[in-house]
Length: 514
Image 1 (cartoon, helix red, strand yellow):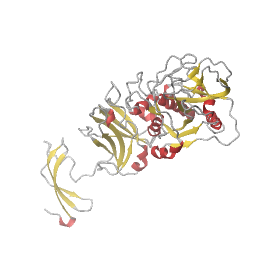
Image 2: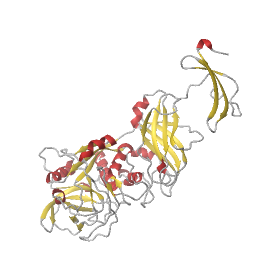
Image 3: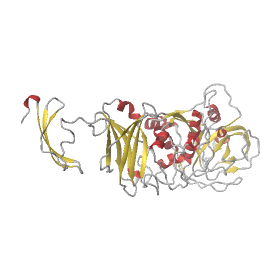
């Protein structure tokens, strides 16, 4: 069983006290523990089973990280994007701002869950894998709301255009994936410690994502019992169907949970992505009891929760790629490099993990939008090897493999390489001279950017052509790499199709013929 979880869309009904909410059916969050090593090997994302430190620190009776300046305002998700809303919109935004000491009150400091959702939803209003958003952020980063285009419909499936936007996104990454089992009294205590200080004395509190069903739950929006955090919505009956992802942002030990069979104390604070009009300003109490006690099999609540460790990254090498194409899920991209100016294909290659046969049968920027787009790809994984190459030639790879109901057509419009070894304010920029025919054909197309001119014969590289575009009839004498010589003559040059006839005779230095 895969440990990834698929969260599907829901249609929230008007909420009144003790009513039921509905959602589309979906696959819930399975167990992680048995697949940790395999997932880390597959993804490169460090995966940690988090446990509380063995110290005697007692967390305070309540914590609410949603009131932190680092936490974004409550929002109403678009379409079936709840996994990305919880993972990127709330958790990633909070963790990055906590790391950098920033406030989420401006769009530059809030991260777009639609950026990740639109790369991984297949061009359909469907649920997504929370893990896929984490994996995307590991290698490509996440774009801020300031850079991501406005999207008010689930059916536009926007992709952003502009190298600078993608370059800014590259700085914000997931460093590690953390998960824990909260399905016991000890597990509840561990999660409380995670929310309080992340397990480090004096550390900043963290937040976590969990999954639950969402059809048939019982919510009381008139809670007036004790609390230190002051919310009035509490979950008193678990849901039985559907699927949804939400974010645990804190806890309150003083909350009194009144069930028909008994009264318990203590609840986690959950933030939902259904807007401020749901629950109490988008928040509700989730009693510890649901984690600590065995539940009837018909009730669905994942007792394993996930968190992330984030980092700020400064890329040293990045590619800009301009593409005009009509059906984006046909395409995937690679970056590469090879030594020597005459190289025709790369020796080292890195496959880009965004725009990788993704997004559905739409133009590059989305349904009803432009077919031309400019991407930014982080090429830092090949930087050390490539920078050591003499007269390096850079390569942009575009692989066309028709997907979906229709095959697209188009071309590469631009290709640049940005070398940031001298700092982000002063990059060295190389611009490719693309061939007249830069069309994207089936299979892998390599577009070269040469940083040095290939060595030529004693003749000028243009002197072998006459003014009518055909080769001169003269014979050229060429010195070969092994010290010999060759006599070369060109004929029947076809520039459009890239063909030319080449006749040559090779001999050693002492036996050059006439």
